[in-house]
Image (tube, chains in turn blue, orange):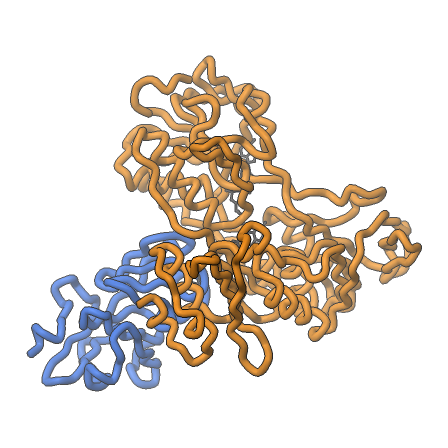
Length: 123
Length: 414
Ligand SMILES: Cc1cc2nc3c(=O)[nH]c(=O)nc-3n(C[C@H](O)[C@H](O)[C@H](O)COP(=O)(O)OP(=O)(O)OC[C@H]3O[C@@H](n4cnc5c(N)ncnc54)[C@H](O)[C@@H]3O)c2cc1C
Ligand code: FES
């Protein structure tokens, strides 16, 4: 899957929050959380925590990490890497880009570090 | 065992989360010596779910493992599914059941605790809950229609009663304290949480059993009688005791290590023998000023103390952590607490509540000088995460914003 989908304009997702893109919208098999960090970057991970059933979009977003709302495992938003217990499995990343004033998500496309696009870079 | 020279051979005794956290930390700090993990139950697994999802049957034994088998192999961690029977510090060895000795220049004791038994005549008939086998046995007892008497309505007892109802059993929850859990979550939330039991059809009794009588071969519903001092009884097919744990200090004491309600450790996780460290529910920290901390029985504290001990075994500075945190799940709600809600230890402190429709959602304990000491909340994860940062960063919060249900938790830390 390499087709990007438009998930809105950057200001539709408030900084420090995330929006969940459901499978119906993305065509992907899992819900995806698109995060907008306080420093203006966009990242996407599988929304469901790798530990139990929790939505990472409802977690605490700070710096380049999200802390799960249930048992507080943290995940690196750039790499999906799990940073602390109880989860031990990293989260799957998805490429996000800001182009032409739109946030474009590439469901299923692994977000390499390089794919990180800040609003600034997109302008 | 001697603490002179860097660690090359570490034996970790215990297969719980403290042990797991320590071995992860050892490798992530670049320790490339030998690590042997003595885990009598095999691959380490996580315990909190044993009174939640695993007990309900929504999670299985594979899912609750802390890591798959390959994780250990990839990190060259030797997993030995055996029990340590003695520490031989003078000989630099740990002795296993059967007499085999494992050489070690550092040992980590992470043996957890054993559930406290009901200390009344017949009390040994009660189920306790600490490991997978306990949870399996309990699930069989929580059959639809079965009558279950749960003694202790704190964290595990309340979760077991909640699971019992979901599984179709009939639960009676017994505790001498009304409401339980005040030191952990504060009075207001303790009351709200305790009231949920009755709302879910659980009978709650304030009292302490004085005896459990078994009626051999009796009809279902009257296999046991739980007896109280006033002569009243509760009939039950199964009795469960959720009344805390006793730290497992036997190995430590036999090896001459200082123990007092837990294996005593310093800020680096070292016991009174500098080559032996302890972590998790089994240990009790003595602060620099000589005061003994209360032993924690919560998950995150076990993880952190494992990381401290790992650093200590490597001679590194101990990592620092903020306010302690715990959670509990019952009746479909997620309860969390960070810091302390215990007013007894905070003279002059006051509690601020966040209420919605007359029901407390969160409680905040504020010190006399306005600093936040603790927060507990039901289904408000972002409020708890904000509170944790407020405490750790020494921010003086605006009490009105804390109490305001419409305040955005993300803004509370600013
Ligand atoms: C049912 C249940 C629910 C819980 N729910 C929560 C919760 O919701 N939130 C929360 O914060 N905390 C919760 N806890 C507490 C949390 O799980 C514990 O604090 C944590 O497991 C402690 O970890 P530990 O590694 O110190 O000990 P343990 O997990 O008890 O591990 C000790 C290990 O040592 C092994 N061992 C013992 N003796 C020996 C020996 N001689 N040789 C070798 N190995 C030995 C044992 O087999 C075991 O593997 C819960 C605990 C239980 C039991
Ligand atoms: S569900 Fe995310 S850490 Fe447990």
